[in-house]
Image (cartoon, rainbow, N blue to C red; front, side, top):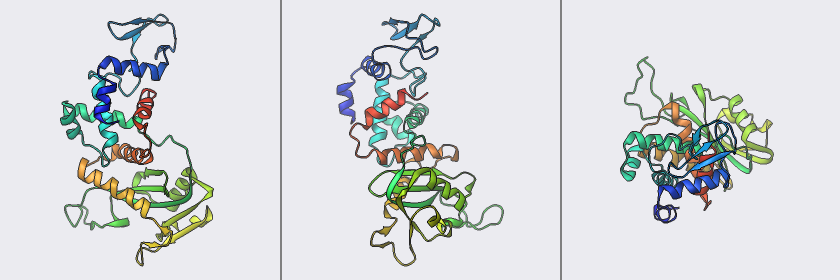
Length: 292
């Protein structure tokens, strides 16, 4: 949905609340604190009173909208802007479009990313699966580091490695590698976790970290020093995803902390995996109200 459709479908804060209540409770409010359905509506306060634990609550409790003081319509608009931004939206840009403070926009975007989390999804990749790694971090300002070591590019860099797997024509899985330990053991565990090894063929480049993948599943390689595609043997799909991810981080966010990098990766994988989903806005809202 675009912002015009949101204004038409959700013209007021009350209409947004009514929709969330229908999605979360299906017409029967349940207390988020004691899970009792014995409650009384408080129309003026737009809340409900639980007769079991004697607490008042609204539909936003324990959701991505919890403790917000903004009209829900702005949240819906912010969600639409983020979902429709192919390369992402910075907090300052979101703040300008929603007329809110940049810190408010940053919190909104981080809460929305909770609903876009892909790490809990267990759908395995099948068919032709391309696997590759990239490194996230800014361009070094100096040739030498403070400890006298040379700043290098590629796999010798000191940036944060991110491993991605793309089912050709399908979904993508990406994960940040902690402590910069990119080993065959770690790569193999990712393949076991995300790939249906009985119904998949893995394609990678010729880096030595992938040399023993043939022990897990059929494995083919492409030598990038010679060519980037040899018929159907290539990693162009995952390389395209990396290009979009890096353009977003460099061009929109400019800098992403290691602490939150996984959340930004989830945002890009979620948009990619739902690029053909016409109901992605409503699906994300549903995930948002079910997120504690």
